[in-house]
Image 1 (cartoon, rainbow, N blue to C red):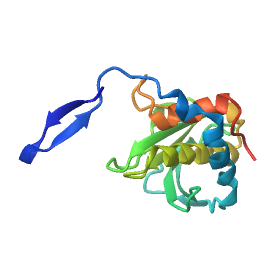
Image 2 (image 1 turned 60 degrees about the vertical axis):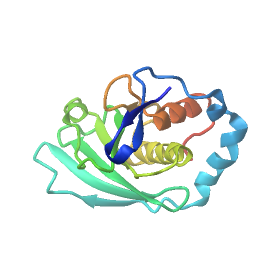
Image 3 (image 1 turned 180 degrees about the horizontal axis):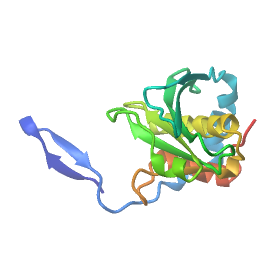
Image 4 (image 1 turned 60 degrees about the horizontal axis):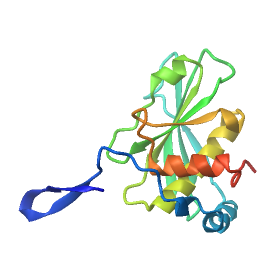
Length: 180
């Protein structure tokens, strides 16, 4: 249960408790997600890729990507990959907050994987974030030329997976969503 922390002017904010609870089983209900997942294909992805020489180096190539979510909202992020690995070994799909500066993580790139980072739009509902993650997962697999099984959801801190990642990975494991 969240605990309240007092803030300025008598306002209080909810802070997550240190214990991580599993999401409600109702969030994984097949009937709830069936129509929502089917609707992902009705909106064109409108994928755009822009080279980012300002973030690239001789060993890392960085591209900014932008695509349309299921509801038309523009999603964006960065894709970083090694200039020395012709075939990627996998993709690390990760999220970063809208308040964080965009950057690539070098650890997966040095290992021959692709760092595929997506910004989480501020104030986005959980249902929409789950669909955003699935759309990014789909784009990561198809644009990186890798099998979908080799796209991993990576939390910024091990063991602190976002609810959207947790639900999306469960939907994928249960076979509710796949590549087109």
